Length: 253
Ligand code: NAD
Image (cartoon, rainbow, N blue to C red):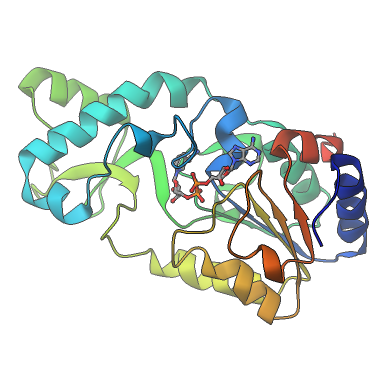
C-alpha cells in the first residue's frame, strides 16, 4: 500500500510500530541527507561528480590511492560537521524503548552511533569512513594520522606494521563484504516482525536483499524513500515522503 499523503503514512507507520515486538531498521544514504551528507544517486549526489574507485584499482595503483584519500579529505568538513537527523533520533528512541535490538546500515557516516546506538548494535554493511584500516593486517588508524603522513610525503601512507596500503574502513566496489556483518544482518532480518527500509534506492546488492529476506521470513515491510524502489510492490506500506518529516513524530526522549 502506498501512503496517499504524509499524515496517513505516519499514522499507519505508528500503528505498525505499536503492533511490532521486534523492529529492524535498514538505512541508506537518504537518512543522512538532512545532515548535510549527499547521497550517491540523487541529482547533485556523489556519483554525479566522481566515478567510484574500485577496490582492485586502489590496491594496484598509488595514484588511485592518492586520489581516493584526496576525495576523502575534501569530504572531511562535511562528515565532521554532520549531526544525527530526525530519522536517526527517532530510531534511537525506539532502540532505547527496547523495540529495536540492532540496526543494519549501508551508511558509513557513524551517525547511528552518534545518535545513541551502541557500536555493537550498528551492523555496518559497507564499513565506516570516520577511521582507516590497513587492507593487509587490519590495523586501525585515525584520519589525522593518515592526513599528516599524506601531507608530509605527498602520497597516501602504507601500514607501519605490514607495509600494505591504508584505506578508509569502508567496503569499496569489488571488495569482499564483511562476513560477520552479513551473517548478523541476515539473522536480524529473519527474526523481526517489522522491517523498515529507510532512505535506500535498494539497488546495491547484496545489501538490498535484506528487505526481501525479512518479508519472506514473515515480517511486515515498510519502505520510506522519496522515490520509487524496485521492492515497493512487496512492501506492506510505502511512504514516498521526506524521511525527517516522516520519522520526526517518533523522536522521543
Ligand atoms: P542511494 O544514494 O542509492 O539512495 C538514497 C535514496 O534516498 C535515494 O533513492 C533518494 O531519493 C532517497 N533520499 C535522499 N534523501 C531523502 C530524504 N530526505 N527523504 C526521503 N528519501 C531520500 O544510497 P544507498 O541506497 O544507501 O546506497 C548507496 C551506497 O551509498 C551505500 O552503499 C552507502 O555505503 C553509500 N553512501 C553512504 C553515505 C552515508 O554514509 N551517509 C552517503 C553516500 C553514499
